[in-house]
Length: 221
Image (tube, rainbow, N blue to C red; front, side, top):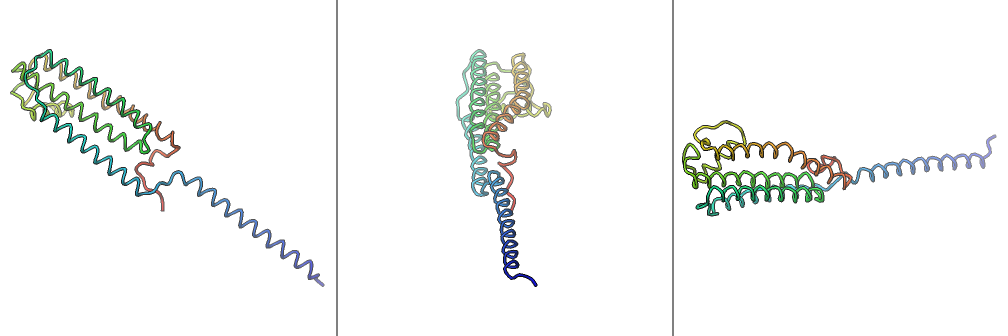
């Protein structure tokens, strides 16, 4: 005959063992959730950050273009134009360096890199557009036709995108030298500067222990 006391003891041990296994499974699930928690970010803040970056990039571009059209650029000599270009390129480098540091400390490094690239690229293009405009007015005939500010910006974009020249082309030696400088600067901006920005993004992500796609992808449901 079975001893009731032994049966009760065995049943109690089985229940205790089952409870321990359940507690272990719950602890394991909690540990997994805690490990995944740093990778999960609320959708709301990320969407607001994305919208804010796009708005800021658009406002920066619009503001720089407005300054380009409003700023008086007449009455400078060729030497003054060269000095203006040199100072402008130095400003581009300073702005780019500041943006790189800001990316490394930003909570959204990839989004900050988009804003930085937009600001640097627009400033670079408008700098050369203004330089071409000043060159044409200080030395008429430097280009195949007289340039307005819009024509200068059109020529700058044509040079940057390498789609080939049509109605506007550089004729003077100074104009062609400036065009070659822009070509070289454009290659550096697309190649070297892009790699520097990518490195700054990775540094910013490593500082926060985040995955490379955290700025753009939504958390899994």
